[in-house]
Image 1 (cartoon, one colour):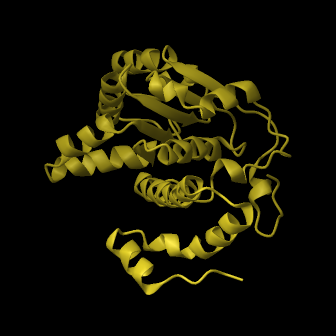
Image 2: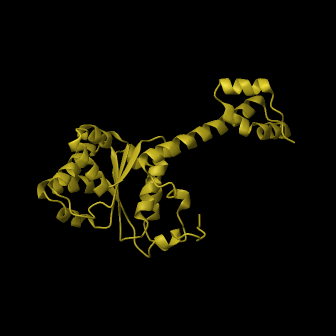
Image 3: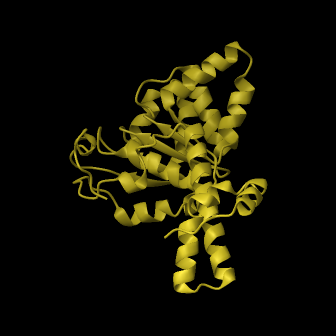
Length: 252
């Protein structure tokens, strides 16, 4: 039997902007009576429910702003995959200590092994922990910066990229970069170096990156900074994408 909530209590909760508490309050009241919880513990339980709800909503909102894939979360990763990588390093990265230390993460490996998903996972963890995140495919980001030059919003766009807590660049060095694109990448990497973290996802080995950039000196400077401030998570094995096919039951 659920507990009835008085109109007076409902009105009080609405005035305090705590109306969502009403969704779980009847069950919490029943459990409190059954377990003879002290008033303080009952209050802590109800307020903890509301804090968790607000944190979840806040994290989801930050993830949408970050343009993260909502399906690519840590809990959706299939542990039965044959993809191989350093699990101990991955566990360390999930603590986000690299973010606190302003280090970078390189997620490397062939096509289809789940690199983008792991990058999204780190982004979602960061959002849940109240960090600001932006994720872009590298080519799309550079096109955005080119367009920003035409409408005089380049400085604003660049500040956004430099000030975000975690910048995730997917498909890095997948296509050749012209002089302006190389310059933009150089600015982003140099300005964030030792100040804020990046996650860089690439199908190519870092030694191949230089050949994709138009200005050898800027390329060397940017790549050297990335390599010397980053953890490297290398994936290998069968394609992970078959684990994401529609209708396939996924593991935890």
